[in-house]
Length: 176
Image (tube, rainbow, N blue to C red; front, top):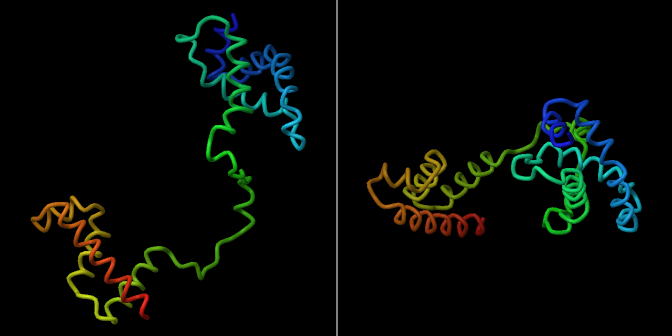
């Protein structure tokens, strides 16, 4: 019965809530083990949120038996052990409202505008026009392979020319 509810819960919130109610004692029990690791947040909250995700990801065809213990295990893994295994575990989650409160400045310069300024400065500092044109072609073309096809050379040749051009541009801009 629980397996069928999990299948329905992918599309029906009520079924998902019923599954969560069934899992709640186990989630609270497993969450209590991690209480010392999370003083600022109730571990049960983390377990319930992770359980909701686990329900939606659960493959009932591959794992048709022991659904409740499997969901509890998936939820506690996702809530407590998986963050310790990821490099991104230290990333802070920022609420969406945070971005609404900080409007961008009209003076913000885009990366494309910064690149244009660097190319302009490199041109005034004497970098060869062919090297600057290669950089422009790469920006427009997107890949060394596409630019190589237009120039009738290999992608390796374009990458070597690009590296040489970038080194010359760096030297010219650093001297400024």
